[in-house]
Length: 371
Length: 244
Image 1 (cartoon, rainbow over the protein chains, first blue to last red):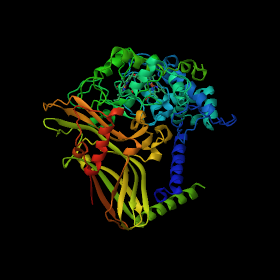
Image 2 (tube, each protein chain N blue to C red):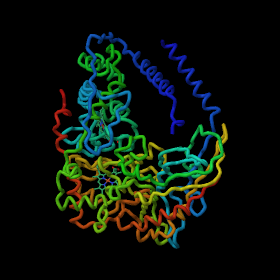
Image 3 (tube, chains in turn yellow, brown):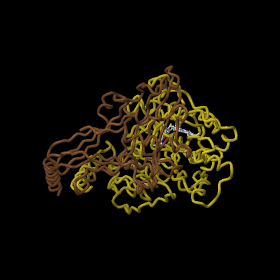
Image 4 (cartoon, helix red, strand yellow):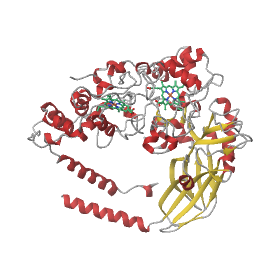
């Protein structure tokens, strides 16, 4: 295998380029604002060691954005601060609320001007997702994702130039950015560092290990009969029970997947007829039209309404949808077929899904509004 | 300091480039999907058991332990790769899924071998055990009920009465240690300095589905479907062709 490896020089050059780019950014200055020297404030980054539930994938932190205590503290402030929006009314937390498992329990979310076109997504366990963010996967990383809501005219309607100016002028943020990233002066505060900090905070929103399901997997408890039945159908483990198919796409332990699917929500005779093309609008591949990111089923009980357009208000409606096989389109997943579940089997399936509930996330002080 | 570093990177760049030029040759493998001898795109309508017709929506498989064989030794080319043949358009389908290996020692090799699926040591782990850069981190390629990675996915829709309505989906997946298959081609492969060697690996899905009754058993994830899965795997040896 050795002869395929890249020479260390390659990494060196990449590093040099990164440093080069970084330096360019530093020189951006906001006109009319006297710069403030921050070097008197101590910069002593303490690495944050995430507590990763058993069976979860590794948390791969970007090499240029390692999590630190002060980085997370800053990110949490930014996440809750409405000054990131044009009229200081909306923060990230307006649409991603801790008591609602980081959604807003609405079909479409009100921003500074009108409503979003899709439903807000829970931020649970985003740290372990490496294959795109948003329903259509249009942002490759959390850092890139966090750039978007600010300048989205519906959501926060602000420009990053203005946000940078507001943050550079604020003495609290000057010191927070210094402690988090070791910058030497206020003018070095920029969108790159702000989105890095927000992402660090988002990566701490980890849920797993506390649910009945996780404790069952660790052998600490037994599921009751209904939950067990639901489990066997979810993962199609038992030859006698019908296959509920869920486990193909909502895979353990995160109960979402890296893949995008068409789960039969939109009827279309051909590949062009979808009202919302989802992934296809991003990749330009017709066969990706109508496909969406598979969201987690963890804490589902707190995240209604469901699907990218919030069309289902209850878990019962969701299960009815899947049982019926969904609406026809040429690339509807083969796992969407009439499931032939009886009423009691449907209710067992729901009992199992409810074992994925972790209410500790909703009250964990580490995620609360710091203001 | 800055200037020194710059010079150094330039030197390294030149160094890397010049290395590349004259060490060894390149092997390019093109994996291609066919149906009854014709290049296969997704959503093409193809005749199955009369009057049934099929359309494919997803074709993929794991290729592992890709090796060039030599009289005395083996040259490892790749541990594992997800080969995805789900192409929409004719150009991509004709090009196939490409794996390129550079800097191979120039000589005449005695053959090529690879596994379809993943060998037992890799299969004993779970997606969460692999880094996100590995295809094996993709949890939709793991089937809990089998305790196994999914080795191959063949998915599509069937029109059971031949009226053009493809209303039943089918999904055939294979997996488990005893159904891991090693494909070995004992053919001379000449790798020459500075040259590229092309090999096509064609998979005919009509042959893959030979003897499968899609209509009465359009999916095979249940423990009772093990026979059907075996047939799919046995069909592979007949469905694969290597073209130099």
